[in-house]
Amino acid sequence: MKKSWWIATTAGALVLAAVVVLVVRESSGPSGPGPSPSSSEAPAPDRRAILAVKIDNVAAARPQTGLGTADLVYVEPVEGGLTRLLALYRGRPPSVIGPVRSARATDLGLLAQYGKPALAYSGAAPELLPSLHSAPLANASPAEVPNAFFRDESRPSPHNLYLRPNLVPDGEIEPEGAFPPSGAAPESGPPSATAAIRYPAAAFTFTWSQDIGEYLIAVDGSPLTSVDSGQIRAATIVEQRVAVHLGERGETGTVPNSPIARTVGTGKATVWRDGQRFAATWDRATAQAPTRFKTASGKPLPVSEGPLWILLVPA
Image 1 (cartoon, one colour):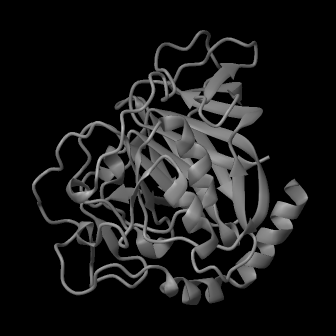
Image 2: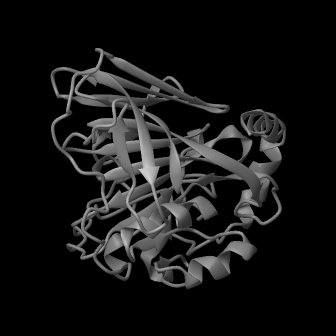
């Protein structure tokens, strides 16, 4: 599986320019002038359910907006060896989030453990739309809630679609224990000031800051920043090794061999928290069950209080 993944992503990188051209066929959303992603708008109200937003992560999409206040960020592999982000917000989200991009089958598998969240996305491959509409989700794409989206004309399309969370319908509160529990680590791990996690066409670096007690995030050698909150930080980093199979056609419905990560089952993981590294495992018995992490000795491994980043990396 690992060999086929690298072969496919290497081939995908060769056609990356074609992918960039094709993605303009993604659901366009409202056009014309709208508020700037950095403008001050009324904050979104508190929500009962989780709001999940699919966020672009290529160079043209940076800096993002609203990413620094996410409670949990999943990094997902997509075609060409690149990554997309699935950001989860509890309580009160920021007033603007984006750039927003397409939903993938990986999102459906991840979100099943969170009850009935709202999912904001720009569009999806035609064959995925029936599954999105039948899933336990409050669907929020430009097709369902066009007024919740606007485009920033100062940025190139398709990396310029933004979300107003206050106009997204609420879902249902997540089951108790859906998020990984937080608390003290059961044991000490070896000191580790830096975590480096690579995809074929994206590189993430997390650097521990003793002063702030969190990790500073960089992507492709540059600080990852959010327009509204500066450099993005995380309290806990998880490299979750997952099985990946190829076959999804991406948002355009024409680009083959986009990876789908399987997040139900068991596997290896590495967890960084408190400036320490922990060899770990992950377990998720069913689609509706929460994901749990354990140390190599089998003890439950809680995460630290604060933002959590989970990177799905092909095993």
